[in-house]
Image 1 (cartoon, one colour):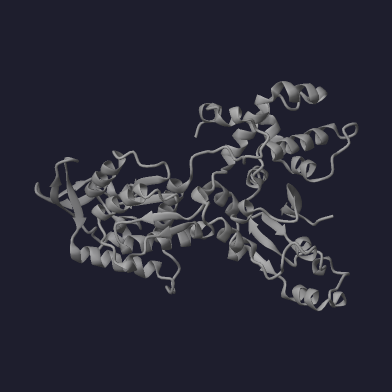
Image 2 (cartoon, helix red, strand yellow):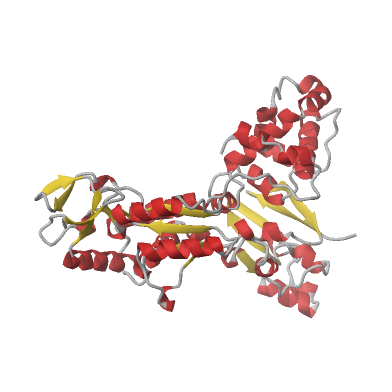
Length: 447
């Protein structure tokens, strides 16, 4: 017999289901905050007292909501993106697959060919509510429901071709509103004896796959110092908390020296050691940072190692400077923009309302520019303001410019961590080896 599970999106069954167990690849999408267990239903199950559950109340049925996961479409879409299943990629890949099967589906489509002139039309239809309903239920009658039967068959073909359930989930979520609830109920697996109610499936999945996660594992972030790491971590916790667990930051409590030299050294070391995790080296957007990035760019680093500088900011384009040629107003992006510049211009102003000037020093021969920085007193003042605003114990609401800075840094990390498109199919997929090796996906679909 066996026991079944399925995913519901907005209270409606989606074409993502399985029997007896949930694969680790799907479990990696969820975390502790998504997991729930009904203590009352668990107690009734353990005591074998079905009468203690009100069977007239559907929400209290022991057949549902004993154990499972609940998240929202927006959070899951971003997690899927970080695992290589972006909405754009799966939609384009779906369209490309059906275009590749054009003769077959056109012949079987009959009078439906006008509704589905190409693979893109099929992909769009599959992602609609009616398309998902057709794929999630029993096969519709082709005589009375030809369109639904056609889409049901197309979902079946996708499940065989791209047999990673995250592919079907990403396609199903492509039209959902960000706040739409996504539910995975595991009650039947517990009642069927395939899973213990004391389990935490997402944690077990991470343990089992620790040796093979590769691109699906934590992203290691290397920074120039402890304060940079702390602010990047707080930024993504504040701006994108649903993906914060994906990133891990170098532990400066172990006292590794900071600065661009150590970023270069650590990045080279991880690449040389064959670390399979994605690694993001984050450098200041100044002269020294650009120089370090250029050094690393010349090393032909593995694809999973990405080197970035902090983002440019508009208020640094006309910024007061002090230097060898006197006072001035210059664009200091790429020459002096450190972490202190990431959180808005307000924190850069002193008690008189004036911007703390950048001071030029140490001409860099390779870049052909002076290195710029804030004076020590100004730097300390700016850092204190940032740390006070980012503190988890801060009583006031986060200032808008600080929040914008958090979003800016989170976007930079997420963008750098998003892996290159891949063909989401295991060795058991019905896709031929020729199709998988064909550069078709890269050449035709783009990045």
